[in-house]
Image 1 (cartoon, rainbow, N blue to C red):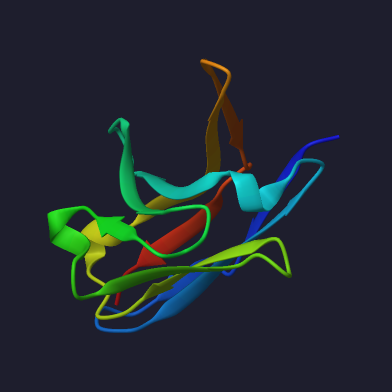
Image 2: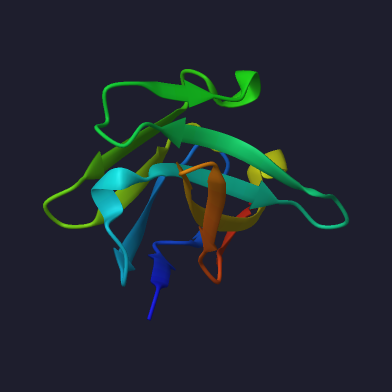
Length: 120
């Protein structure tokens, strides 16, 4: 069955770094755009970063540009999110998402999320 398993979250001090990983299985990973979303306490889930299926193009929410880097390794079915210069407002649950559109039909797969807490 389809699985997206995130890891790498935890507690970090402001200014610190974390690297999230998401390992995919059960579908053809290289055919999907991969996204990282974040849901802060009391807020809606928001898109953080995206990477195309080949990894040639990435995109970020403005507040993350220059601090976060999304990458993928299609040989390992894994997408990463390197987060530097973390701020308390980066706290939240980070979700991995696979998105594809095939023959006019959109498909979305979600992971269970990993908690990131930025606090001193």
